[in-house]
Length: 95
Image (cartoon, rainbow, N blue to C red; front, side, top):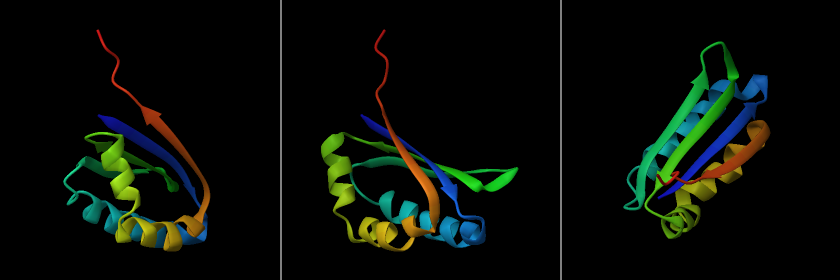
């Protein structure tokens, strides 16, 4: 498994536009064979704070995701609407 969370701060004037673009990207991403989960989460008290939670079968599946047309469109159109973007890669703790 390859798990990624992305903490986002959206420029206030772009909040709704960004969320729409993120949801479009998520819908396309969930159709990828290597994508197990892709959620767009928003702070209910502050719509300028959001998080992406993504789960892929492995790092190769995530790399394939980054080559997709919808991801490249998201990077070009949605990322400029952000004030900040911080990515975190996670792995499952083994017992």
